Length: 339
Image (cartoon, rainbow, N blue to C red; front, side, top):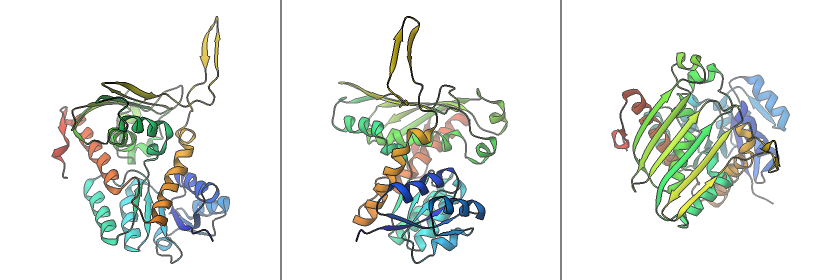
């Protein structure tokens, strides 16, 4: 009989439903026994949709269940660290969406609880499982570009999220660019030593009134001496725009956007092809499933997860350094933050 990891899901919002669908319909080796949300009706609706036996309005209750091996934490950011800690103390493995928390003391407290319990924690940086970005990382590791000179990452959302979300998100650096900070480390297998950031409000003045920015450029210096440039915008009217290039001494490796099809129409009027996939859930549909498959393999085989708690902490540090650089209008050494 196939061994399965029994999951409880916390959070029945958009990303909770993505993971619920993958765990119940697409991934072998997983069984979802319960889902919880602070809005009980949301948990009940999701349970009915995906055939989950138990729905609850009490996350702590499902974490303590004897028939649960792992917790998928898909709730709002401010709850992540506490649920990681509760899961660890209950002896449950945890898969947690990014970021672990918005401040380092909360991150470190959660990681300490995991270390003490000996449970596994994987952070949901799904882009590491995208075949395009993974192919670039593999090419760099294999020496195909030679000594890396420059990493360029472009991330542009098709439209900004609701203001209610922005107000509690931690800001563009901790919410949106956090994925790109993870990519910077992932692509080169090297740490960042210095961060410089600038930003503006160009998409919607209300975002500025909420205390955030919607447009940003960040430059980073690696320990090896290579540079990285990240550009973010909360709006690209043509669709989700996410591209990466690594330039080195022997050439470059890059990936363009995914599109619904690869048909190119060339006529006297011009050259036309499909726009990028509009929504990030479309672009990373397979990656969301693959990251959970990786987590399940780590549990069943008792191996290290592919995206560790340390991997989850490092982008938070870079995001905080970028925020400090933007506010203080200076370059910030990563060493200014605690190791």
